[in-house]
Length: 438
Image 1 (cartoon, rainbow, N blue to C red):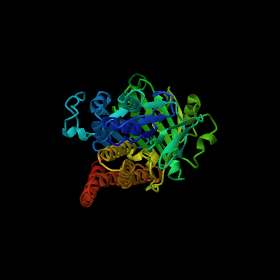
Image 2 (tube, rainbow, N blue to C red; image 1 turned 120 degrees about the horizontal axis):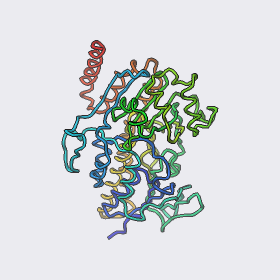
Image 3 (tube, helix red, strand yellow; image 1 turned 30 degrees about the horizontal axis):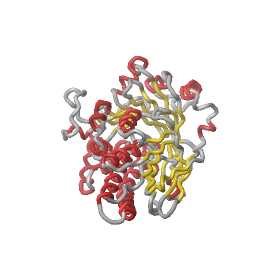
Image 4 (cartoon, one colour; image 1 turned 120 degrees about the vertical axis):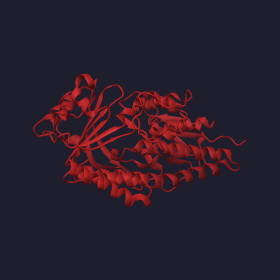
């Protein structure tokens, strides 16, 4: 039997851990190298919604769907799109289950599973990391660069100067996010600033401390827009609320020029609640969410790789997830595309291992097939995300001016092209009738 390939995965995020889990189920060993010293080293951000054919499919394939259900919130599948006065222009809620607590078995295929259940990022990471054999993840190993080793193999050089070659890695997979060190071996292209940035805050125990905001969110998420401005309030599984306040920015260094420390919660709240704030005239539930924030405050800038970004194939190296197709959050698809990437790559590697012939050639063919499948699939999603960002953040008169057109974008994305004329007509008819009935 041919020796198994030596595979290094850089990054213990959702994509990297899912890939490792799927390889483990195929009895293909791998090692994950993660810069963070521990799974809970830093805030993992807000909540994620996973989709049937991508994120949920990957978790099913990984045998982790029941663990996911134990933490998932199907009542979180409720979104409102409003203006700054909390006037609702669109509501979206998945089909309701009989009791909103009961969950199906991992083999069930009932219709309500077409929802987009929510899970907090820390919970998803914990599920994935705990599913891996002990020692799979090497924590606190920050990659500096990947270098060519003998033949087509590669070695890893870490920030402390240490090296890891293990006799040469047959495949290095970059699941190391926006500023991927692995991608640097494939392309000199770097993410670009999208023009949108803002602050992330949190309100602990939303039901008790911010009952009005909690009631407005209805267990899900509010996306509120005004020209060049967005506020997002999202219910988390631990009862807290995550709040994003974003605006169009002139440059990526906006946080350095804002005149205060954006990590200082009180200074940030004073700015957002001040008379000169972009949110000064927003209604009280939004301002209450800012006023009652009591957790970590983080300034965030949205970056993206060019839509349709590709690279020249290189034997022994590839990237997936944000490292391959970083996009903004406006389509809500980023983690789902990443988990689908992991599923496809794991399947291709497993097929290569089972085939006869030269292992190096089979592995290279597997990676090439993965890239050829991923590029057009991720490009479609990245284009949707880019177009939605342009509509919501850079169009006058939002949300009224774009509510129909953005709905059309979503409908076209999720339906076959032959149905587009009918689907578009249905969307416009809905909003026409909604406008007449108030």
